[in-house]
Amino acid sequence: MNTNLTLLTPAKAERAATCGLSAIYVSVDGATAETYERIRVDARFAILERNVARLLDALARHASPTRVQITAVAMRDNLEELADIVALTARWGIGALSVQHLCHDFGESTLPHQYEPMREFVADQTLVEVDEGRVTRAFDHARAVAKERGVALRLPRVRQVEHAPDTPGRSRCDWPWRGPYVAYDGTAMPCCMVATPDRAALGNIVREGVEAVWNGAAYEDFRARLGSEDPPEICKSCSVYARVF
Figure 1 (cartoon, one colour):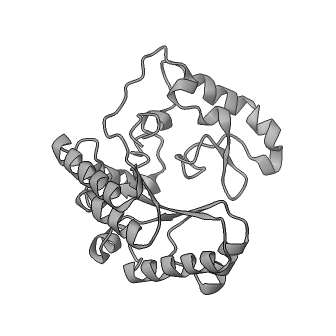
Figure 2 (tube, helix red, strand yellow; figure 1 turned 135 degrees about the vertical axis):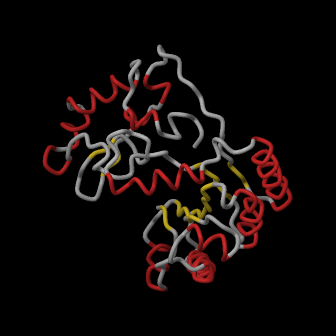
Figure 3 (cartoon, helix red, strand yellow; figure 1 turned 120 degrees about the vertical axis):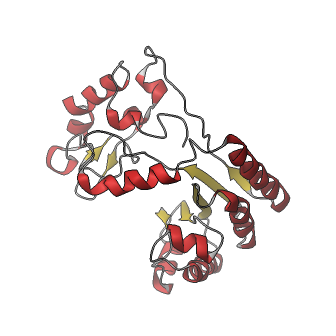
């Protein structure tokens, strides 16, 4: 389960600790109130800290095997704070931090109008075009703190990969072959990186059934195009496809 914990009540903490979740991933994009609240608009850093403690307390009281991990999205606004996020993770008593890059540049020509501000945000915050020395220094500092504090740290690549024209689709991204991603209304999408079904829909499992969608023409066409010289635009602008996630 992925959560930013902003709405965690005591009752929800109890349910999270007893419902059998294997893992809870908590999104934290800043180590200070100033950075965190600038990136995550309308959230409050003090509430995040309170709710992390609330969740961990509930898990401990129930001797829950549920694993908790912190996730952070690296961007220009928090790059120099990554080492502090590592230290914050350790202070909370959590043993792992996974740092990801922005998932998508929303660069496809068919992007619905309402997502254009997201395209602008990514263009403003991506690390792909940031000075390599700045990124290296920030990542090295984060690694040093992680080693010192005993935190398992995962950092992303920031140099994009160009796939050769004959690269098989599965080697570019195997998600459309290994699992569907389904929206709340049953709409199937190629992966979670697409995020919203109005960007790429491959059928509806509620109306058509899982097997019919998974083996249907829309999915098969998407898979074939992914391994072609003209892959789907939504893949070409994806961080997983470019290996910078």
